[in-house]
Length: 320
Image: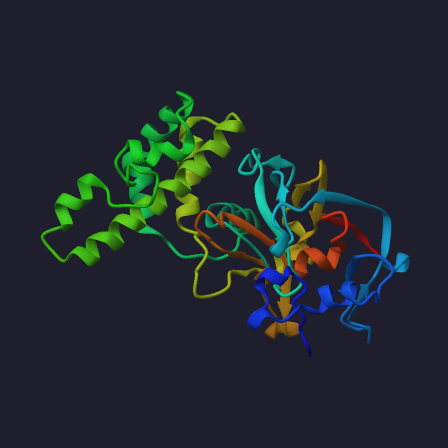
């Protein structure tokens, strides 16, 4: 299989002009648009189709919803909120950066939101003791600060679990305890507590927006602390529960793009030997590039995707 870089020439290796830019330069296409259709039917011989210079109307339904590109090289755009079942998480209500990428098999996003999604589908995870400690010791404080309308990204520094310059750092209280050991271990522990606090803030803010009580919020956060995605592996789910899992939707261009559980769960094997895994994986890309969502093949399999370099926009329509 051959993979072509269809991004900006600013990322070309050794100054080489990418295939797409060469096509445009040589006048080989009618319009500066290319589109993807990925066939999700494993029994078909045709795995999909990429069209250079337009799109195939046989492979989509209705009209495309377009959003402007915000970063040319990556075909990056602004995505709205993430909806689990029928409940908005509020995590991207102010907008989240996202890219559509056929080179990514799964659907990747920030750990706090992926944890919420995997918890809703009953996926396995790992227990974070730092997370449980944050919820136990600082949970009520975080809720009160959120109710006091303190900016969410300032809360963890305000309670001393993250550096005060807005970057991840060492808790002042923890630093005094662990500095008797080596500095490297203290930094790792401080980063873990900071990360745990940032996750807890996201979860609690989402629950407050759903008007949940304090007890419910703390219990929910504790449950999520036990299902943090394993960065070294994939999250397993019960194959027998797939049909009862919630739909997951992404708001793009004012429209909700849904994924049904049978579309975001990957089944490997047959019969009693079959295993099912979540199609969502955690990706924590630091600023200024991140946080970032990557809508990979799981999303593009459901939605026909158009990359319009002439009008600098990306479009999605239901695949046919």
